[in-house]
Image (cartoon, rainbow, N blue to C red; front, side):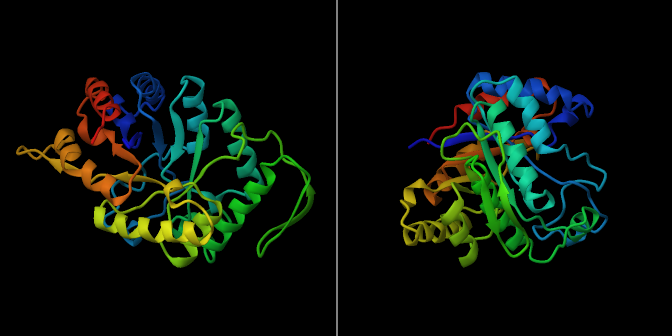
Length: 299
């Protein structure tokens, strides 16, 4: 089976002098070329302690403009026809559960059923404090949120009891266009608890690591959890980034990255290949060639 394709819009506005409106045209073009999914990154605010970033050196200054994913994806939905809309990932616990359910369902309606809701817990304590939300037990809050969303997306009168949130006789409409609800993609480490959560509620996994061996180990754990939950392990979707390769000049090389990374990622269990497109583009005219190449990924 050929992998699906995705591109992250992170940083693309910098090719246009910071004008994020131009990214709308880039996503429209990706839709025309046949890229399967567009992906956004999320931060609500940014504190100064980026040295606490747990995945290496934080890639941008603290004043980088993180555009809000749900708002941005709504703009992309309005100018596209087929490309799916996702996040890598939305820091869901920073949003109230009922509001997130409403926003996601609205976006699914606007896009005619093209939303893949990518969610995670975030890592930055200051971001939670600035939003008035406890940092502790954010994993528990995420799980509770997603159960609330699943319940409210049915559009029926709903009651809920959880450790952080309880309500009675609540109805939330509109409901998603996708008849089984919006697919949930979790950007979480493959712990036992997270594997059980994804098997209960999720469609896909978004690994933070680009290492194919790490992805393979995680896929095995999630597939085992699917089996324990009575689900077909083949249903698990995995959106993986490839380790970027450079040319002899030191510039990032898209062809080398694809040649070295696609096969191992797919063998590890990836069903979708996601590229940070801006790495391979020095100016706007490079984008069309990069997107066309991404759309044509094969193994």
